[in-house]
Image: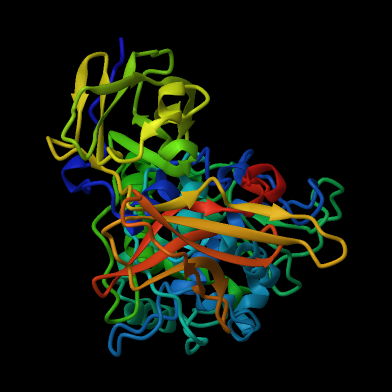
Length: 527
């Protein structure tokens, strides 16, 4: 029997109503960890993609350190700086403090996580989620995530505290960012516990000459591949190996000054209680990544939907039929659960008796083993009935039953847009004489009357922020008795994927999944 357990550490009251394009994308990035490819780069936690397995470095440490440096430019007085992905600019990466913090770790992090960004997910959001996943999948606490960060157009002013600065300078620096002295101690301890290590510097620590640690990475505690409170227990016990506490140069032993600034009271409390350390650090890390420039409005904490459709797609096929496909995710199910899941849909005729059984694809573990998610698929191959939906009737909303329990967002259902879709007549031509071409045909339901229909192509602007290029299509003459009219474009053949955009009643809408023309047949075969 399916066990849809209540989420004990998340408040589901904040869950949104699907669909919501931005929240759908952010929720998937945060919780669909088997799909976004990020967690594969932090499993195991000492995995490093940019060098030898014996370098002593890790992706996880780089990602967490990068987020701190991105945030640390914040000035709460004037609202500048904060989590805005300005760390991607070479000017910020080249500042003096970066020499202590794996300068190439910043560029490595951006290179890995920036491609995740799109029109709905900023680079800063991708950096924040990367750091969260690094912590959670390396034995750390669960971190609340809000989305909606806005990427900077230029570098911020310097603001990251430097090891050689005195205690008053550090207190002032963290106060500028919005943190008290006690919070400074907690945040530094947490960042160190999560960062695991720091690259050798002649100023901080000597060459290690260790063949299993070729970059002479100095670790902050003895459990350097996962999160725990050892950074505190070893500090209090006097056995710490933290190079910013027991380094060769007293001037750069900044952590020693910070930790001892309240007589070690905060560090002692962390050493005495792993739970206090974890809960305090989870709160401080969430605050850190939520530190954004003035005027940026973040979403509510993004919690996983208990039942969520995914990758819904409609194609206008031959004989005035529609092919419908997609997936549905059931959240927090028992690993061995195999419930009967049925897809129900409503159409334009008002019929509500359409239904098919869908097939389980996989059950995956996410968030460091805290939750399971079960994925079910439905398409015109696994479920033939979905290959020949009547185009006139279409499909307007879907619901699910899970072992006969109705899941429909409290009666709202899951809305489906069947007004604009790719047509199966889209095709490509291989012509060595005149050039290879691809033709996209887009079907527009009669009566929708858009003023424009266009392909949407993901791109980057001059400072690498996600943007969208629009490529207009041309309408064919419309048969007033036809269910759909066709808009088309023929262009040079490429592997580029496009979604569909349209302007309807003065508003822009997006339809369909990113689709390459190679997803269709050759023109000689479809015409």
